[in-house]
Length: 285
Length: 285
Image (cartoon, rainbow over all chains, first blue to last red; front, top):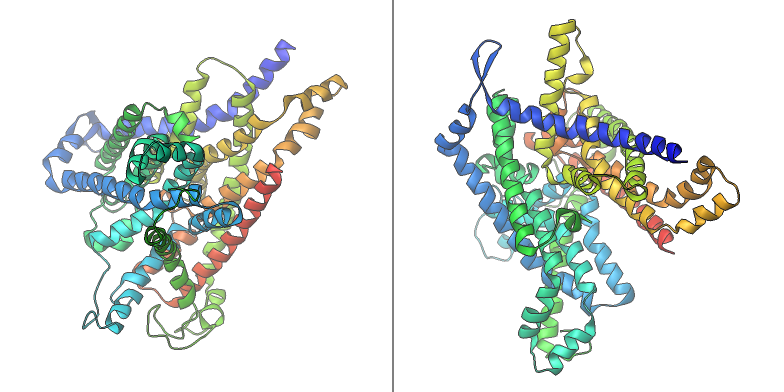
């Protein structure tokens, strides 16, 4: 029997190991290797930090990097602010059918391709778009207004795309908060704000953290939304990576950028987990 | 703030208005995409020139409907082909992964589980370029050492399938693993007591129990593959899948044909989403 079990174990381990080693681990080691080399002659490479030095000495690169990081943090905060009242409403104010209906309604847009969602925002925001026409019709502006191709448009798109990944963990964690505890807080003289601050938000912290981590990572790695809604000046870091790889064919620099983006994302995730005393496994499941 | 605690009416109505606004925000982009698919105009924007089905059925060079646009239809075929293989591969590996992590105890199990989650944390663009680098260096190696040109290691369908498979497997593993964790082991033990062999227990008890989760994960995998953009962008070549074709068209300047494609996509993903919700409901009961 013992022998039997171990054969099954190795049979199950094999696909797992092949998948993870061939498609995730080796590619990232290769990427690091390429990021840390420099072409010295045709087909001759040497170890060097040149690509990373280039990143820090070329203002366009690190400014784009910082901009992407700051805007991702901002988008995460905005998503949390917008999603929290909605999640609370779904989790605590509703019961039965209307609750599952509104929750499902929240999920529906995210079954649709990100490309389609972004396209919808383009139709709404562009110069000939729905909002511009509505504003003219209402007499608020005299001519067509271009609402697309600026940072606010990028922000709207990013928040929209991330919403689901904030609402689901928040609803889950808020549902586990017993109504009695909220009532007890009121009975003890608390008002809405003190109850929120001292009862609801501390209880919801694990959900807030996992939502924020997922949203931040997705925003940082997003390519489509900044590219389509931000136009030529969107300056998103993933666009730099794409340019280095596909347009300039400078794989060394592109890999270095990839490593830097991974480091930033891991650093922020690690900080979030440390501050909230959670683990990656508990956040994801 | 729960239903059993009375709040001023003004506050209650403000809250409701906010929820309503949120849902308008959620639905608006999808609604305009769907509406303008029927606009009798060359551009997906106002003014509304009346209802037409041209963007689905027309076959003139000026107005090419979806069903006559061979390039578009071909890319749908490419996407379906990719999605089929990604689904098959990821469900297979996810099922073996689920058994590995739910039924066996081994050294470094927690560490390996964390590694298993890693593909979710890596931005899609970076996963794409790392696989591109790795397969390219392997192809170069084969070329130099064995003088062999290995076609599938260059950008193209195989790499797109592998790239999507790399991260979709993680999601499928989480879905199937969660179901396996809930299984009542005594069902299997009863079968063993009645003299069943390991394979027949697997075939008649365990796999049927897992089937709803495998179908649900399969639908999710298919949709995620069909709609993937970031990873695909880095690995694709001339046979472009639907999202890439749509992206290129979108940048050239779109016609309402794109709206028509998007609407069809929404309908298909909506139906698939309903099926997966239905399967999950059945699973719970």
